[in-house]
Length: 278
Image 1 (cartoon, helix red, strand yellow):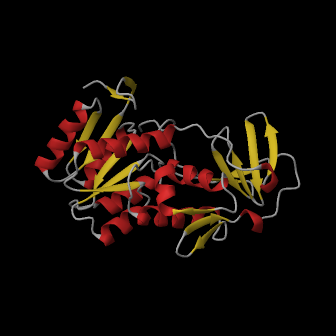
Image 2 (image 1 turned 90 degrees about the vertical axis):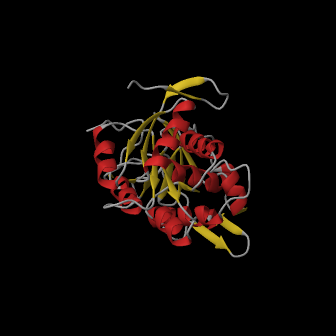
Image 3 (image 1 turned 30 degrees about the vertical axis):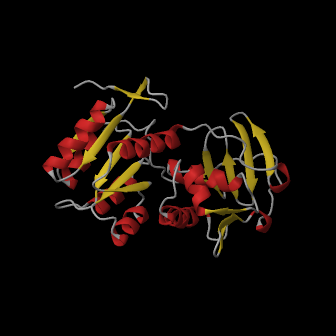
């Protein structure tokens, strides 16, 4: 089956998009796949976690739609396995919106979740939002008086102490070592860096980063912040109790050099655009 063209925000076919759907319930799996195909997506399906992992490794997928409750390797375990080697957007499906399911999925590296049964229009909206995050073009993420600016061959870099954001290459470095961020984590970091010292409430972050047009589950933000802190340092993002979060730019020392050169990198999981099926 050849790849289809998924509609863009305006409803017209644009780029080929392949979704990997892993769901053990035959009826739900078939109905969700058919619904997504009507919207122009190419859908690969699996009924268990291990088969889903095999399909993921065999071909390139732009987005993963994983059920939490799967036989053998469950959705949480599958999400963790995938995050070991890939930054591909992951949307979890929970039967009840159970708190443990939601938290476990987000901690494992999922970008967002939906509760089954989910209306097709809502599901497609979440998928489009995740795909936009994976392909967005960064704008200037910080004011000049709070960061040391440097321009190099690849574009504009912003340095905050030991943290450097390459806004052209969409790369993040800490002490010269590349930090692997998912598209959602990267967009969240850039949103914070665009408003240094300003408190951002969770619903505003859901609107600006997750593209929610409605009040959403603030745990999505909290768990993404938690993952981001583990990667860039625990003191970069302050919690302002009762309000939200603040990018703690004033705590940081600005760089003393005009450019940042990277001497080593971590083992960086591949992004959807660069990952080839193996």
